[in-house]
Image (cartoon, rainbow, N blue to C red; front, side, top):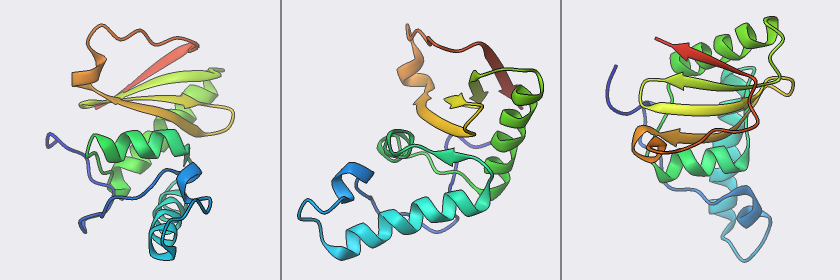
Length: 129
């Protein structure tokens, strides 16, 4: 596994958080790209990404390929089968907090930001290899 995960084999241009795309003077092109990115992530996996998680992935220059999205989706499903409500999903240099009931990734943190970080509000953890 490489140091970075890739959402799309094509390079991504930065996008604005969902709250910023709600029409606060952004160009229609920026709004369209952000919507297209969110739609692509939703189509590739049963899991959803909150605007906060998408922004964290973008800020940390993490991208996820379809295969990796599938592994994360599988981890969420395994946690659901064990009765977990909210889980920490560890995948390489990436830690994701997921709402299992909603199948939604709430936030994303890389190993640099994990030092001395405390994850709260979770009742399970899944480690993906």
